[in-house]
Length: 149
Image (cartoon, rainbow, N blue to C red; front, side, top):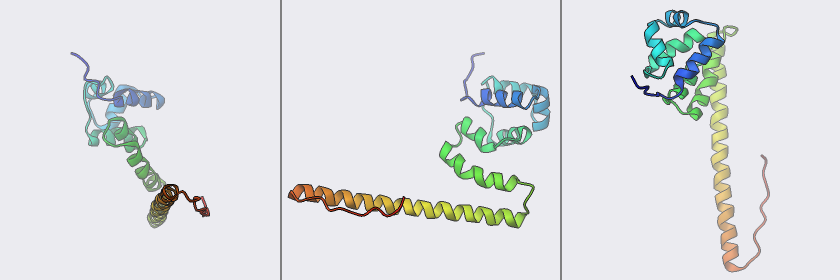
């Protein structure tokens, strides 16, 4: 039977399983999937569902989002947005209230930085328009002050 070559999620899973020093059988049992099915995933013959990937990630103690990216279900930027909250939620050294507060703070920083990036882009576009206008009229380009990073 020809290989379907379903991304490189199978190869990645095999590497992670070997790094965790687990046999195919051990991982299959820990993830609640059959040994032949896991073997087919690792060889690129089967495309696992998001649920199966989540079970495998849990058994391997790795991020499910990483597996989703490997399987082409999630792009890397989306994964980055999800990994920090996921890491916070799995930290056993802090309580649930503390986890929620940390996630809220993280999200507020992300929103603040996104807004600053949009504002900076608008300022850059305005400055570029001023420069084009000055060039068109043959006048010196106005100098603008830089405001922070």
